[in-house]
Amino acid sequence: MSNPDQSRRQQFIAGLRAVAQFYEDHPDAWYDGVHLTLNMYIWGRKARETLARTVKALGSCTKIYDDTNVTVSRKFSGQVTLSVFAPRAKVCRRVILGTRILPARTVPASGEVHLPATTEQIVAWSCDPLLQEELPPKRFLTPENKSVYLAPFFT
Image (cartoon, rainbow, N blue to C red; front, side, top):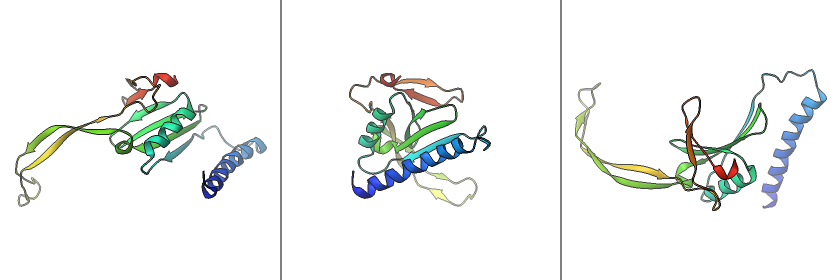
């Protein structure tokens, strides 16, 4: 890790410790309604490798795949969660299953805008396990009916 990166990392850690110290020093400060979620976004060409290192460091974590991101998260307590996001396109493989033809049509609201026929790809995403030793993820639904994958290696 380069010096600027190390400096930013130390500032980040110091900020987290300062919040904890604030609550230790001020027992009368309100905290009961506080739910702290640290959202971190990974980007760039090495997003998959960075996310894999993060998953390994987190240990037991939940993985959620949605239309745009892969999210791994870990609850450190009932009120503190770390969530790390990466673009699904950088972590998973886009698999073209076929194509379909959308017929020419007129936009209903305008009656004048005519869209030509187009060919659209039918795609699926293959999200392989992030770590070699990880078993294939198991899918389940959360109480909010969100599709969630839990890595059995980390549970």
